[in-house]
Image (tube, rainbow, N blue to C red):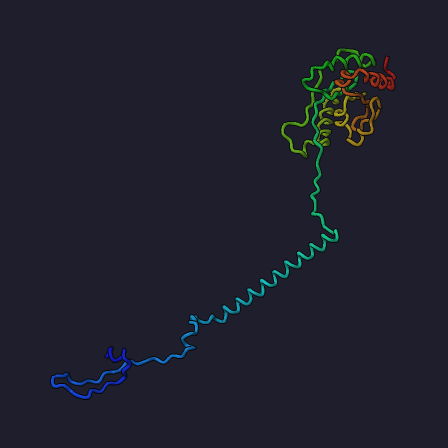
Length: 256
């Protein structure tokens, strides 16, 4: 049958039957499938299950949200560009901090029997003969009858202090308490203030800025008069400052 199929023979009927031939049987011809040209050339489409309705809605919502976000970002960019072109740029807010000026000093204090209280802006480890200079000033002004007593020392700040506790206001309170204790033993009649730190330890910074060398003033915490001089160490370094000392003492009517 394959031979006949190759020759294009669709049906064969024998004309003679041989004596020893096999019994005739009906053979089924191969069935030819009829397919059109369109079906052969048509692309194969993969069949996918249709998405659920909820999934379709979620995708649509995500798309709408993304479009809205892009529109909002673009509007912000346009606003910034318009402000930059018009020169109306807003400066970021700046933090305002109040800094407290820290006070750091060392004071040498002499309290004489005649009521004179001398306070010098001390320079530790300077090696300058400030006590001898003070003795000479007091002798020249007629303010020293006996030997100069041992000086007391006030160091500020005390130990480890925070910035708020090391300011000038706290320093003044400490110096006043120290002097009050000394004043209970011996009443003060005259204050001799030497140097900027000694002055600021008794009056405010605003008041101290108005005081000049050789000027007489009234210390609010004491009933006695006070007079302001350069620090003893500065007088030793700059002998021309001695004229300010004599001028200040002459205002007291005691300089000789």
